[in-house]
Image: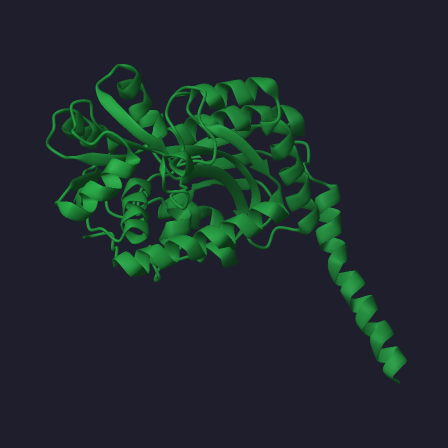
Length: 324
């Protein structure tokens, strides 16, 4: 009797898998169109990366791949759209560190990142850059660590709960200091005020500040990365500068609807990793301030879970909210 139950169970499981396998074998079908949803405005780095990757993906799959910008709600509108899409592999979502933080910042969000979406691939990361005005008396990261404990420093960011804000919170946590957070509406106005001396420091998105460093308007103290960047070869990493735990990259990656069949997930994952290895994509990404660090679905899933847990702890410790 027990053997019969086992055989029936195995047969049922096999039958249940037939639709998913059939769907995967038929993927992609002629006439199919894929949406690549970017939950940020056009022209930003995530958008630029998605368009480069989307073009290559269209060539590989031989179907149209249309990038759609669905900005708003702290990048939640676009994410929710894909989370509620059909699980057929035709709706992709561009995500960043912001989404890992949102898992804690928005406990009542209309979707759950790790439940309603599946990781496909990590594409690349852009390290945070610690910058001060060119005429600042703070000369290097060790100096900043000392000064932050002895006097009040105003630290700007592109908004509450954004990667620059989170990086400041991580610095304070490691250094046991208390810099004052000054949120702006975007990276550009915060950098303008830093150059003008209205604030003391920024933990900046690399692409937003690198040109100002190279022009001599800002001084870079350290790169929050494990390796130096070819665009600023003389700027030390945080490990070299005295704070090895301050590692932060504003990465970009791709997810798909959470119930998408495993064969489709693995096919798309393999294509994305292959695309990120192409020399023209690597060159373009490097020029934009990214460091290509492609990881497939399984490896990215582990990474993403770690990022959600890491930033969840920092957000709770620093009592970060999106409105203060």
